[in-house]
Image 1 (cartoon, rainbow, N blue to C red):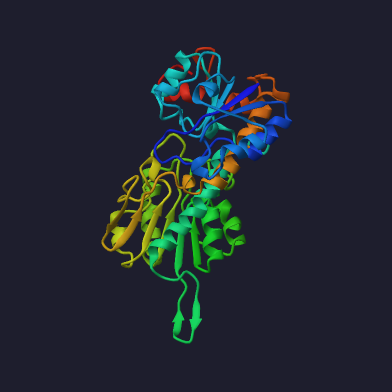
Image 2: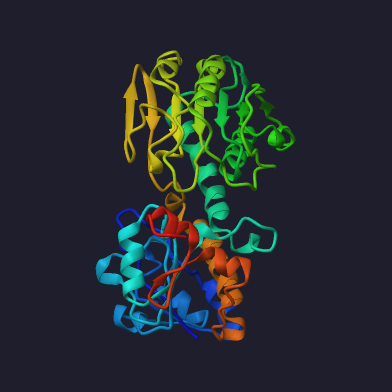
Length: 376
């Protein structure tokens, strides 16, 4: 099987679907790889590095001829692969009905990386988690950059600086990485999650778990579970009980997201107003509307002396390592779908069935069909 790696065209996307290390792994597994010239430039990866790893570097036309196209962002209308091609990438199928319809009509077999099941068996393919690690790390650095204070306690001849206080809402993969990074930088860290089962994970990183008696229907078991939507009453109760902790924070990092749904509003404008001037809110859920009522997706704004960072696609700000991790996810998925380089789709397999979106001219994913209003 020949795998094509096009240059990403979505504005602001600096990642690339495969890095040279991924190319070598695929070559060893029986795949051929063709990379579009300049595809890795934004991640500081040169064409010669791909060639040294065993890939062919060519133009966009050569990439389109490949059997499988691997991308980070979803393809635009003029990038739709041809009939019978395999497409893998972040497709956001629950929120992109036009894209899904276009891929089905084009006869493309498509797999959405965000639909990979969160199971032990699929862990090495879980791109949501790998990119959340990068985003959580980057969110803490963004908060530190905007704060204007030291994060650690510093004792100097000129005086003592108290450590900054960081509050993380949501202890999934991104939240846990944000907690770990803030602790490494010396901050006093607190974290809250509606799932009490993650308390031990938070405490293992040296942070304090904020305990609030809120019951969630169908509660997940830990950070590996996808977040579930909670009721409006639960959200109001969260806000009331979290207000004091938010007001005490120098940096607030919010990470709560529910696949296929708008982000829950956890932080009200009144809560922001109660924060100290100079404080920073980093809203990792800005892509789906934000956890903070005042967040503006794609913008960094100031309200009542508080900086609210709604920057999108934080993982893309660290393109090299984000691409390295994502490339490993792609390699593992390709090896699963095409053992020894030969495509062999088993739709009874939970990974294949969970991640496939379109096949043979049809939308075949049950959750996607339901989101599009089609009978499941």
